[in-house]
Image 1 (cartoon, helix red, strand yellow):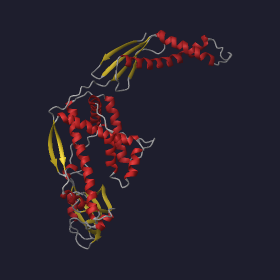
Image 2 (cartoon, rainbow, N blue to C red):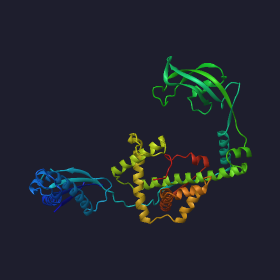
Image 3 (cartoon, helix red, strand yellow):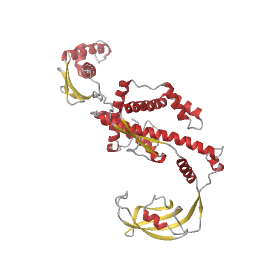
Image 4 (spheres, rainbow, N blue to C red):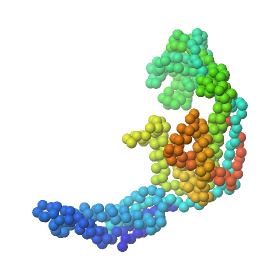
Length: 443
């Protein structure tokens, strides 16, 4: 009879020690050898007439290995079930005996899901933000749109703040050109602060057609360590100075943006988009604040295997953010440093475990009516809302994403019932720029 013992290594680690009796192994070997006998063909014997002694001599070793592997699998499944283990990782197997004869003993070390007893957020203080859109927010958004659609015109004057320059440059340190310090027909807008301060300052006051030198000091915290704090000289050739022409806010401008009913219709369209984005952003920030407190109040010993798996998921997501969304069967994910993803992976695993337990505890489910409302709200942002809705309905995974979002909001709202909300009012721009260790309440 199979022997099973269980050792507790830690809160979430267990070791199963399993012994398979040699009699059980041998009985299964005999059965398989008898099944094999009619199929064996050996020189000097008629098909199916090879003596069992010869079959055992030639095949018993190979068959024993197969039997032991199969019995190990069956025994492990039975042991896990008999000990009521809820595995969070694949077993790590260690064999303690030889394969050739006698009882077969092996160990399986596993991680299990910890027991979770939910602590509600009673009396916990959580920052909850509120935000609304004012006329000044709409005006700022319109100004951004006008600026994004500005037209550049060549001018024959000295460069000033706000102009766009087209230049060639080559950098030298101690009169030696350095790597990455050269470009041709490079465009820079003075005042955008995308170049180091001394570089932009040195371009002011020059005209198209001039060639000149500027001296710059790289900042102490410059991203390229070998250049930080160093003095450099740049040879500059200024090809063009361009001044921006900002389009007027009128019906013609609205039409260029795809709104044919005039500037008031443009304002309405922008306001609706701003409301959608603001609602989404407020929800993200508040959910993150709530879920961070949820994690803080419910510490868990997290299975390492789950964190490792989540790191791989995050590495995959990062790969596609960098290299595009197209998925291929032969794609090879670079070995991005684990340190980039460990914190987020641990948070995702922690929150996912709490989340699953909490939804069961309170029997939280999304009503179909709410899912339909969210779908209609999402597709309303598309030019062809009917086509967008059909696209969502064609794939249950897309609808599942919306369902999960609503379920998250249900969990957040339920958690907040027992907590103490600390209300913080923000403007539209403050909310959109808000970073609570960067945003998302998503699991």
